[in-house]
Image (cartoon, rainbow, N blue to C red; front, side, top):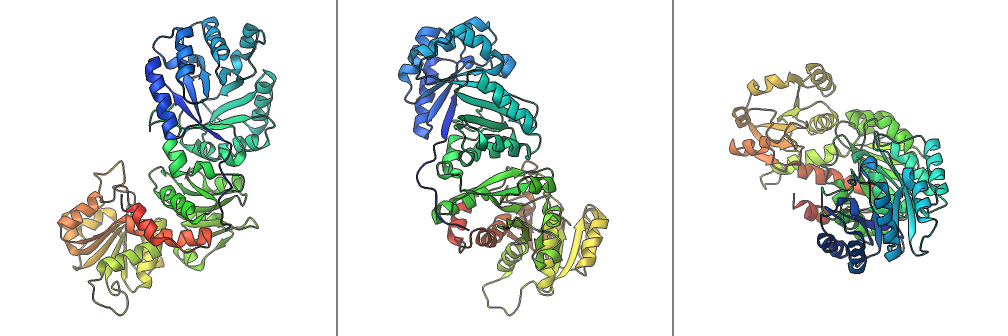
Length: 515
């Protein structure tokens, strides 16, 4: 993996949407945008409670510390303006005349607007002609035709936003962006489209939108300015940047981008790590087959399906039947391995050690109960067996529990039987399911009464760090190991596989200390 960040700052701008009731509030937000690191502000006139065009626009331009983009979005294009078109056009024309750097007009209204201004546009002002599709992302051919229509409407800058129903929709938009002969703003809205907002410097987009605060978005899926700059190292992304990501469903809770992006930055690795909300793993890998999409972590529920997508699989991962780390070789082949079992088992062993030196694993001979028979369950069952533990699999579906138990020479239970299963004391319990994960933090896979038979309880979940299961285990007198320990442990090897560099172990621990 190549080391060395791109030279200097990329030319893609960060634009902060400014939405407020009054001019004074807008001016305040403009200064906040500059302080946070935005390059330009989008003044959303349609969000103002009342607009007195000349004095208000004059003041907004005069007081703004950054270049401006004026938008007066009507209801029929997803905005708030519900008045007549002539008044709207007059306000946008006034903004141009008073010194706005950009104005945005919708493709549907562009012809009418151009007639309205009779071609009188100050040279300083760039005309953005925009189109928004809040339902889906059209085909590549349809997108190409859309861009041609926007250009023909007199656009200095082309802008279109579509909606991602699948993460593979983003690929078509990135392709259009990278091949565009004119400045282009191309976004895919929604959680499945977030990659389009983060990777646009790699593909040469004119700008991306970053909000001042989380949740205060002008379109679905917008990151904050802080996230763009501090979390994703947006300023350093360039055409050579390698893309890494965490594949899962759900996935937004994952702390992987915080861990890897910080480590990449400190080590000078030209990479960016993003959340990838994936519905169909096979389709994802078929679509993003370029070596630019270099490395992937894989989480619930895709670890087993991802193994089937690999061209080469590490023997241990093959034995487990699941992968949590995938790398695209330069020849395009996909390699998969499993670092889950190392992270989890080593953290459980450390949790069991009492400080005395010990020959062999403290798991040897222990009864080790694994809740869940998915990818992480398989990894822990395999790891526990390798350390000499006697393995029991508890799962909602008995058939899946039995299948995994047979693989590791263990016993199978249904989840319902777990509360009454206590053949001995001093057992180990490992939850590998999502029971108890945010937002369902009051759920737990086992009763508190049953926990007194366990010497140690481990939970693979790390959001929250202390789940109800771990809280009740502590109250019952068990040692506990959090999912944060497993997360850090499995990340060490992934980072080394991704970069070829030694894992910054202390840095990982420092980053995760807040969680």
